[in-house]
Amino acid sequence: MNGKFLTTAALAATLVASNAFATVARVSAFGTQPVTTTLGTSAEVVSPATGSLWYDDAYNVFYNPALVMDNKNYVTIEKAREAGFFKGEFDNFAYGVYVNRGGGTANVQYAPGLVAPGVASNAGYGTGSVSTQRPIDLFIAGDHGVKWGFHVAWAYNRDESTGNTVANTTSTSRNGEDRSARYWHFDLGAQVMGLEPFVGMTLFSKAQNGLNAGGTIEQELNEFNIGTRYKYEGWTPYVTFRKMREGAGQNNTVSPRAVQTRVNQFGFGVSHDTKVADGVHVIKNIGLWMNSVEDDTGATELAKDFKDTIVPINVALEAEATSWLTLRAGASYDFINTRKFARSNATATASVNDKLVSQAGNTTIRIGSTMKFGKLGVDSVFGTGAGAVAVNADNLDRANAGFDSQTFAQLSATYRW
Image (cartoon, rainbow, N blue to C red; front, side, top):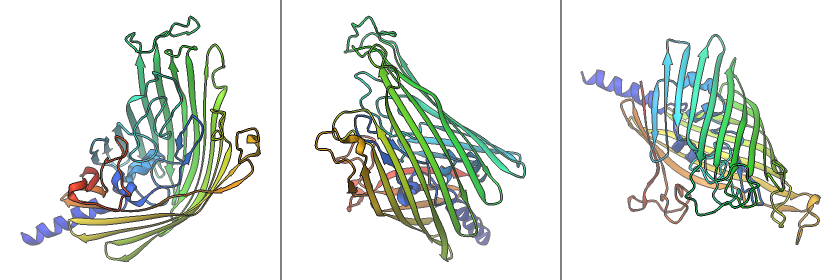
């Protein structure tokens, strides 16, 4: 009897601790790829992919839904954040439902304005603007010799109430008190002979703010991303490109989309997963990212066009300390992170046009764990909780961590069958 129990426990621990199975806490500990933050009044954070391009993780289904076939039959709940359910039917079909997913980077929630996965924040959209609500992600995937998957994300909000503090007295406003925001995103992905191509688009995404006294503000968001990974033994080379364009304007002064923010992200790299001992893996990654930003949303020095060049280096360690405990750590370091401003800003005050600036870049060292109870895994990443940082954020990069300072800054539970 004891032998059977130990065998069952070991098998369950292997299933739960597999590198392909994880949650936001694991992604936060290991790190992802560099993001681009626009300047000016748009202040958006644009992520090239929701998940990780350089290691396997269940969260990667959000850019390549074909990976659902590798991550079916589980339910996951992120404390105070999001939840998902993925189910396999027969041997060649699977589907999934995920709710309340936040911004394109882990631990970022929806903010005022047209905000949805892939764009983590948005300012300057006018007083009284509304955020999208109740985001939901739907998946369907199959395996017919080639694994394929389809994903659609949707979020919506509408407010026609008149009890607002900002009165609209302008007759030129088309919608009066009407405020709305809607978001649609679509992804297609595949897996064939080690190749994992994917393509995604944000379409039909629009926001309106009828509270603005100068006329209704309209905002549109369009995105396109494409890329692939290739898995060969322990090696994973990858390449991706994302194009984002957001336009906004007032209906009686500036035509919609006249004021725009445009971001082009191109990146490639290679990672290697090394098994150094039983249950112990070390993942190394190096990449090259070139990001181009054109920001027309402000007239100050900060509203500039620029190009970033980033060379990130990542090292991640994951080890099964015992049959019921997996420990992990991730270190991210930008070996090169520079920004060159464009000459088109020559009229800006104290212009730094055509000048190269070294960025502070990304340097993080984080630790997390998974506790296993049969088929149930409880994932965490250590930090100090919200503390002095913004609401709904987790400070994962302070040096101190103790049970008196919210050790489990991110916490989730995942059950697999």
